[in-house]
Length: 105
Image 1 (cartoon, one colour):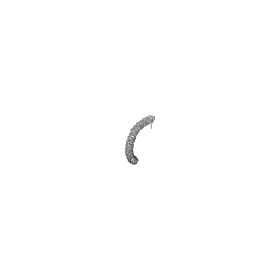
Image 2 (cartoon, one colour; image 1 turned 90 degrees about the vertical axis):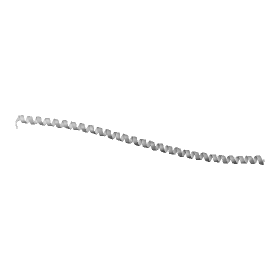
Image 3 (cartoon, one colour; image 1 turned 60 degrees about the vertical axis):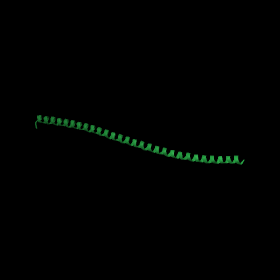
Image 4 (cartoon, helix red, strand yellow; image 1 turned 30 degrees about the vertical axis):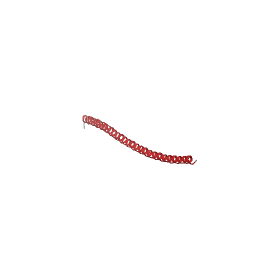
């Protein structure tokens, strides 16, 4: 191999090396862009899922609070009814005793 052929071979090898490096840079950039897009998709999916779970938790909490409030209302009404009956019974007893005292006295 002559000196010119050796130089030509070196130049071809350098040209190939530059092309390989450029291809590698290009591929690396494509991979980075693809990874960024995929990361954004994963992030959006996670956010969406978290928002759905939040909405579900709020709905369940609201439903439970409403059920607890209804239960409390029912219990309060029951207590009020019992106090009313107790008051009426005591009132009736007091009226009877007052009538007995007035009539008997």
